[in-house]
Length: 502
Image (cartoon, rainbow, N blue to C red; front, side, top):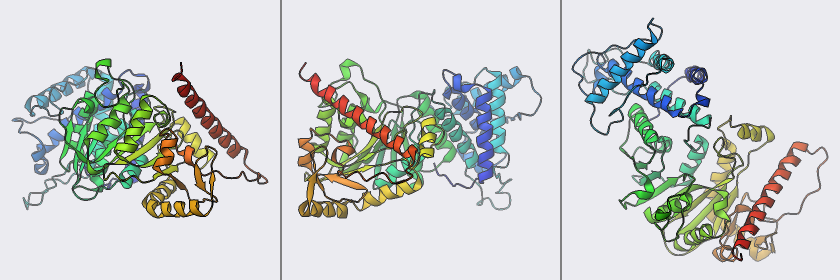
């Protein structure tokens, strides 16, 4: 899954535009199963590469021996739609008949939609044209052969998936590239660590991890058949590394292999009632089961990072019990409160990144940080779901800086508490005049707060400064919106508390 990043920027932009035009012309934003288009594109990409391998020796290692030659019909060549569909159906069926069982082409069937076939042929031609084929590279020296599949094909498929997902009707929930980059940088992924990504969707996180460290032993689990098929397609196109992809629900896995690092973005929803007692805290909520599963599958000395809905951090009942398990049975390392809109276009719900490890039983203070979009324009882009840059480069660098310096910053926090402490609005102890971007709460303080893990709960209280002359109305409105969101969270917390007495 190596990303050589050798495609020129103008070529990428051209392909992005052509993919967008294809999706718009087919009205995939209104389709019930838009991801089927990506699957069909992946089948056609395989066919085109199979055809190319017949005359490019370097590519032949990626394909089984076919026995006879096939031809690829370009999109601009005159052909009846029905004829193009028949030809691609035949070629896909033939490739499916010669691959090994479990290959992503096994049991592949091409669509009977002529408009899809035309657009798919056009996009595959776009990837093939100008992708840098080296004509017969081994003619003079057989040891010199271009054995890599050009990245253009993998990039075409990956970008098509991304654009379909951005439409919000695919049922596929992917984290943004900047957020995945940040999570990978916050974890220790050096050496040959065993890394697991339960609920891996189309494998984008696994690809990124391989790019950062090819020596990692990577594994991903995904119960949605179409998503795991796309993950296997992308692994084939990009190549590199021994990545184990399992087509199963990670909550139902019978194996109990443990991992040094676990990254997860748990799906929402509930399991069936009979599966509620899988873990120590009985619950039907999938995110809470994921967190308990990660606790069990984390190897000694390992670290886990999970993106969860903000409600997991403050609700009572099962949520509180799971938080208690995290704080008492594992080492809760940190909570990163993500910006509003970080999970758009899937949901506008606030989310946070939970970080915990499995080490010694000695507990330490929990690190907290609130990430924000820097201005109203970025807020607007996030709200519209048009800009995947949920975290800016500067913001990510600031978060990493605080995270990597957290031990020294905690010592400064403790010294501040000793020298001059006060209570914040939640009556939790904080140093007076604290100016760092992150803050902390010790285990005892977290216990007294019923294991509430919302970052604002422990944030240092500050005097409100007088409004500077010419203060931006937009900034005031954003602050008002933040206050209303915090009030709503408090009301929800009170509601959960009163349920205990009904």
